[in-house]
Amino acid sequence: MANKRSEITEKAFLLFLRKGFKAVRLHDIEKAAGITRGTFYYHFGSKEEVLKEGLIAYYALINAHRTVEFQQISSLREYIDLAVKKLEGIQDYRAGSFGADIPEVLCLSLLVEVVAIFPELKKVTVEAKMLRLAKLEQLILEAKQAGELRNDVDTSVLAGNILNIMAGVINYLVMRQDVSYALSSIRAQYEQLYSLVSV
Amino acid sequence: MNCLREEIINKAFALFLSRGYHACSLKDLETATGLTKGAFYYYFRNKEEILKEGLERYATVMEEISGEEFERVGSLKEYIDVVVDEKVCRIERLQELFGLFIIEELYFQLVLEVEKLFPAYRRRIDELSKQRLSRWEKVILKAKQSGEIKRSLDTSILARNLMSVSGSMVNIELSSADLRYAFSDMRLQYGQYYMLIKNKT
Image 1 (cartoon, each protein chain N blue to C red):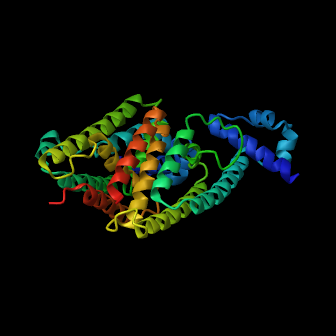
Image 2 (cartoon, helix red, strand yellow):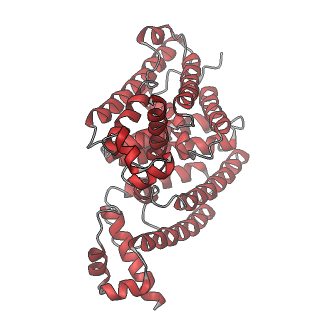
Image 3 (cartoon, each protein chain N blue to C red):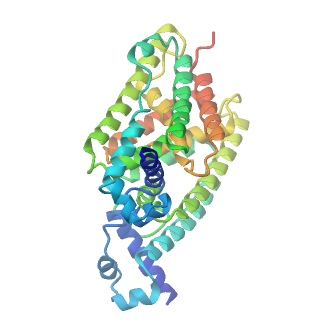
């Protein structure tokens, strides 16, 4: 039964990502998960509950995934290449299955819609952000020691700079502007910043 | 009487900013303002009217430095200070007006949420961000020509980089805002960019 519950959560979450929270009806979730209304209410009290569970499950996955990713890279160059590659994936992302490969920016634009209803969900994203910031700082510190980056660059300020640039995509998504333009702009911003901070 | 009306607008607008317009029910507004439905309808026709007046009031602090003042800005370093100071000033004025800290990004979010109701506001924000970008580009171009910063830098990319720095404010919560921290973070980020791009002479 626990499996059914997570299956419903995952199917519903993918729907929310594609259509937005408000636009998804209970009927859509039932259809996607192949269940009756009775089964839905056996597992959940409301649409809100499904969303909350989905977001929490997603962030647990993405945090674990990032921890592994950071273990596999050893330079800022690699990090930037990886970040750009992942951002580019947004364009042909079709929300096929539930997993850590769902771009976080898509969840963030969903969050913009629902954070008004569940302020407590902001905590989940802030925690994920703090984890990423800490890992990124560690990476920058090591890159400075390895001679990849200039020593006069402040580690945590640079980490903040890098995450801020990435946050630019969210603005484009929220404003519903041209995403491919946003991505090329962000790639260029990363490259310019990298050329400034690298030795 | 006018005083009470203003107070209602302030409290309701704060609620719209933190929770979103559509998510606020009339009941929420009544609770936040301490009004009964009857009193509420004595002052306002509907929720939309409050939103409109709140947005108008907010708009009075949106202006940036004038074109002439902008022309007088002598260097990129000076302009960075102008931008940060403007941001601080705006927050202080908003506090006087509404009695609370308001982060510009939350206002942008609200405008986007209600763009169907007030399309003109949406256009105003688009214009504003275009103007901001073009001002950054002008200042950067001048700084490259004067030798203040490296000539090899791409003007429009750097303009976007520098604009993204003030976006760091988006993570600050409306209620628990520690603005001193937010601004010092912003200043540090600008400071570092500047250190990286200036000419070493």
